[in-house]
Length: 134
Length: 76
Image (cartoon, rainbow over all chains, first blue to last red; front, side, top):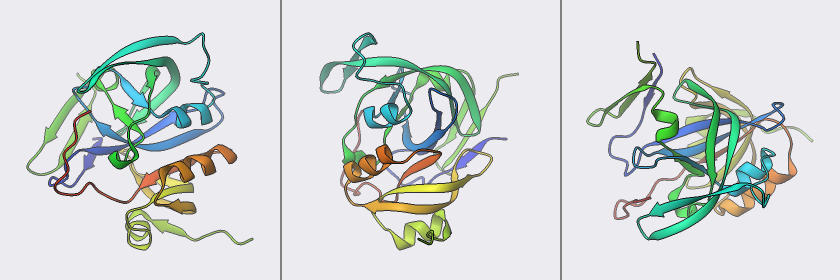
């Protein structure tokens, strides 16, 4: 059973996200916040560029993001695969957008990844289970 | 030049507290969580780690060993 144990006293839930490069020959593991309030998964532009997805490409669709502090626009692209908490999603849409370094993460794991699974968070114990629905 | 030793996540955190790290030869557990890695670069500055990342090919890991101060909240 895919399960992550985290510090329940932490102010956010951080997980590792494994992203496959555009050429399928390498991957990067980055820290992300599990965010059920984010409709899409967000990854830092440097990370997406290193993976070969070229977030600066002007032909990429730009997606509107409504945040706590206003409205922004970010390029959207699709990664070959993304894996977190033991579960993998192919062809996942990603918004290329930088979060402040103080956040301690390089992105957000959003609903477009999580919705493929049954997510259980035991906040008192700091346990996350992510399983396929039967 | 000799490579740095392969260290567990716990040892990495103890040796490089509150830092951004770039790791190679990393190992994951069944939940896609970092278990071990070999430190290639470390810094308090995330941008330095991103610059180091751009120069290196292959399978790599960006990792942060710090945590937010208790008086800081997060809203994305």
